[in-house]
Length: 111
Length: 115
Image (tube, rainbow over all chains, first blue to last red; front, side, top):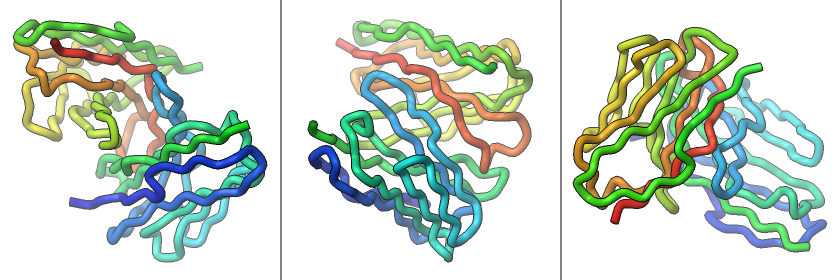
């Protein structure tokens, strides 16, 4: 069974701090997606990375796909309370495989 | 634009009762459709997916079944609910064609509580 390990499981920080969350696997993925989920709602796609070493920026969020395509990180600069939520990574094994989701990192940003 | 509707938002059912959750997608044709269950601290578990009308693939043996009677309609059912069926059920769609690499778009989920 291919697993995606996300760390930390929980993170509570003050507004304005920076943070990084990680998504790791022993398997190689053809692409990796990051989602954010707020309580009582479905996950919303943030970004898809497909190339080893790729870096994508979405305002204060920076996503990186590892060179070997086994891991990814999400860095948030100057976190705001609106960043609070569950961050999920999901990996795909080619066009015929289903997405495999990690358990998520629950982020709380206090004002 | 594409939208996905899932209902009901919350549901409380007794053990042994039947279940029917419905999901519809608008603004796209021939989508791939998915049912997930999300338990606290366990991430998203894929239950069923469908690449076309009447085509259902089951990922986990369980007490549930799925059907796709129309292109943009996906239904999750059970004849007799178990306590272990409690959880947050999410429907999602992605573009047609290969399943992998496609971003998935989720509904707002159904919180199912079994008493």
